[in-house]
Image 1: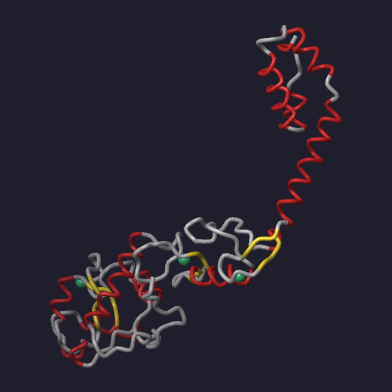
Image 2 (image 1 turned 180 degrees about the vertical axis):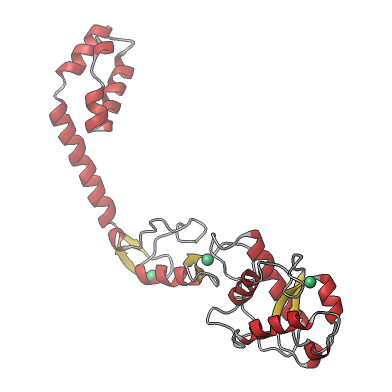
Amino acid sequence: MVENFNWDIFTSSDQSLLDIARSVYAQFQNTMSIEDIGKLLRDTDWNSLLSAVKQEREENYNTFWNEMVTCTSCEIQLKRKDCFQRGNIPFRIPLSIGTYCISCAKEILLEWEMCCVLCGTRYYKQARNTAHSLCDSCATPQNVRESRRLISHIGRISGNNIDDVISLSQWINTLNYFSWMCAYCQSVSFTDIDHFIPISLDGKHVASNCVPSCDTCNSKKKDTHPDKIVSIPRSDIERVRAYLATQNAAADHLGLDIAV
Ligand SMILES: [Zn+2]
Ligand SMILES: [Zn+2]
Ligand SMILES: [Zn+2]
């Protein structure tokens, strides 16, 4: 009986044999008795059927991979097996429409490969609207918000060389140092970047001059030079100054990537 047929022997060794058996059954179920189908399935020489299927598959495989194809980009002829294989490269990268030689594929990948400005991980860029290149794990809402904040500051501050401004990683480090709180009062969350030496007094938008501050402390500081501020305790001013002295004025090696 077909019902008693041991289908399991096919699932473990070769799925296609199970498919063959099923199609035999589907093909003959209306014209043959169930006993005859069972007999047919039992009498079939599965071993030679299996090797025939395997051989045919191998031939198809070889024909397919040895076929000459044209690189979509540079149009050289090459065997399909010598083409670039996309592996686990994300589908948003346009390598799936067409075949590419290795060097053309590498060129395309280079345009998409980014280096995360926070962790240095190499990744393929998203059509994501961040100002900095951030890998998936670093592109948290917080980091993306700070990235946009830095970019908007650069827009407002003229006279800075774009390579010279505080980098996102420097800014995040500073935020972490102050626990994302106001650097001066240390009692409320920060609301914006404060320039220790005000921009109006020639302060620069660099890591050694930027700290997080709250609206209250910011308005107490205004455009006053830190040496002349009286409304913020001197000890807080000096504590912030001491921190900034440890910061490099130059942007670190992981700079801005405005192009994303
Ligand atoms: Zn090519
Ligand atoms: Zn990252
Ligand atoms: Zn404050």
